[in-house]
Amino acid sequence: NTTTWRPKELQTHRYGQKEGGLSGPYLKQHVRELIRTCRHIAPRLPIIAAGGIETGDDAKMVVDDGASLVQIYTRFIFKGPAVVGEMRRALAAI
Image (cartoon, rainbow, N blue to C red; front, side, top):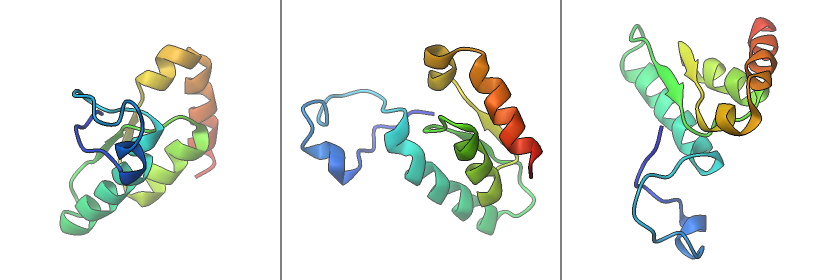
């Protein structure tokens, strides 16, 4: 759920050139693109979405993109267990 890849909008940010893994909202679009690509290449392969998933809507979007499971870490650390219920409710609507 981290990457050393940096989106263009971060390259001029004061921390944009720092080494180490990037996580959080900057990964959201990249993760969604990877899920769609993997789903297209291997339609039966289980895909675990991780990175940039902060809300129930984000969890729903990655499942809609083709993820089989959703992993959260950073958002859980900062928001606590309440985020699990929020994501569960969003996914139950599918």
